[in-house]
Amino acid sequence: MKKKVEQISFKARDIISIQDLTREEILYLMEKGKDMYTEEQSGNRYTNSLGKKVLFHAFYQDSTRTINSFNAAMQELGGIVRGFSGKEGTSVMKKECIRDTIVMAEATHADIIVMRHPKDGSVQWAADVAHVPVINGGDGTNEHPTQALLDLFTMYLINNDKLDNVNVGIGGDLAHGRTIRSLCAALSNFDDITIRWAADDILGMPDDVTRCLKKRNVAVIRHKQVKDVLRQVMFYYMTRPQFEMMSGNPVENQKKILKLLDVYRITLEKITGHNFKLMHPLPVNSETREIDYQVYFSAQQHFFTQAENGVFMRKALLDEILEGTIYERFTGILPDEIRIGNNRLKRRIKARRKEGRFIDNIHGGIVLDHLMPKTEDKVKETLKLACGDCDIISAYLHDSDKSFVKTSVTYLDERGLKMVCMCSPDPTVNIIHNGHVHEKYVYLLCRNDNCITRVLEEDVPPRFYKDDGNIKCRYCRHTYEVSNPNMAQFERKHFLATLPSSVIPVGK
Ligand code: MLT
Image 1 (tube, rainbow, N blue to C red):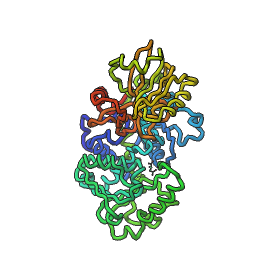
Image 2 (tube, protein in one colour):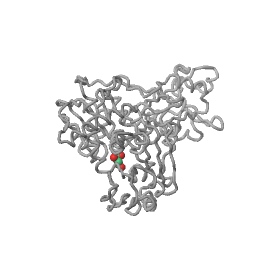
Image 3 (cartoon, rainbow, N blue to C red):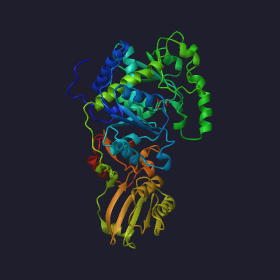
C-alpha cells in the first residue's frame, strides 16, 4: 500500500455522506481495502487492531448485509459489537427519541455508532448528539455512504485498481433509493464517468442528482430502452422498487410498478451477449423479482461478491476511524451546540410605529404574520393544540396574499413553531412585550417531508448552511427556498452570510 498521505485522516470522523469524502480519501480506502482483500486471498486475514473497542449498531430499519458486514468487520478487527436491529424489543417502542438512544449507546461504552433510520438526516442528528464517531448505515432516501464505498471497491477490483473512465448503467428504482444517490455522488469524484439510465419518470433519476452530476462533469445519458443501456456499459447497477419509501397509496404503487417491471426486469435474454458486470445493493425482491433467478447463474452476476467486498471496506474504515482514538469519558451531558438551531431568520426591528397597527390591542403575546392566505384557521387550531387554551385575539386576511394571527400566548416552543410552519411555511414571528415588538424573526423549517427535523418528537432544531449561494438543510441536505413574500433580498443575503459554509460537525 502507498504511504499514507499526511492530510488524509479518518481518525474520530463521522461518516454521514459520501460527499464529505474527497477523491484522495476514497482512493486511500480502496488501496487499504485491496491490501486486506489480497491478504485474505492468500489465507491471512487482517485481524486484531482494535483491542476491545465497542461498535454499537442502532438499526431502526431492517438489515441483513449492512449490519452483519459491520459486525464481521469489527469482530475480525478484535472489537466487540452490541446494539439493536429493528425497533421491536427496544425502548424505541416506548417512544424513546434518537437523542436519548444515542446517549444510552455511549453510556454502555460505545466507541463508535453505526445507525440506520427511515428519516432523511437522522444520522447527522445522531452525530450531532454523540461524542463518539457515527457512521451512516442508511438514512431514509438520502444516503448510504458505506454501500457506495463497497460499490466503488467492486468496480475498482474489476477495473484494475482504477475508477476513472468508467461507464455505468443504473436501473430499477432510481427515484427512491439511497444507494443510487450515494453511488452517483461517489463516482462524480472521478474523471470520464458516464452514467446511463432508462426508466419511467416515476422511477427516474431525481433532477437534483442529475444537476449535481452535470456540474461535476459527469455525462448523464437517459436512454429510451434498457437494452440500449446494457449494450454500452461496463457495470449495470440494478435496484429493487423501494415501496416503503414511496408516498401515496401502497396498493396503487405496487400496481403501477408491477406494470413497469417487465420493461426493466433483468432477464437472461436481456443480458445474453453482453459483458457488463451486474451489480445490485441487495436484497432482490423475491415477489417482484427485478432480477430473474436464472441470471444468478450467469457470468455477469457480481452482486454476491459485491456484498462480500463490504467487509473489506468497513474493516478499512473502522480501522482508520478508531485507530489510536482514545476513550472518551461518558459525562451524560449533551453537546451545548445542539440546544438551538440557526433556523431563525432574524429581521431588523424597524418602523415600530407602523407595526403598531398589528399590536395596538395587545400588550404581550405573539403575532404570527405573513401566513399563507386562508391558513389562519388552521394556524389557530394548531396554536390551541400547541399552547393549550390560548386566547386568539384576532386572525385576518389583511390583504390579498397574507394573513396574520394575533394571540395572547407569550411563548411558543420549538414544537409549536414547527406545527405552525407545517400549516404555513416561513411565518414571521413577532414577540410582543409591553406593547412593543421585542423580537421578530422568520422561522424556517426544512420542506422535505421525510426530513428528521419535521418529526416533532425528535426535537431536532432546524439548521441550515450555505452551499454555492443556496440555503441547505444541515440534516437531509435538501435545498431550501424561502417563500416568505415580504422578506427583502438583503435579509435573505444577511441570513446567508451568517450561515456556516459547510456542514460543520458540532460537538466533536
Ligand atoms: C439499503 O438499505 O438501502 C439497501 O442496502 C438497499 C435496499 O434496501 O434496496
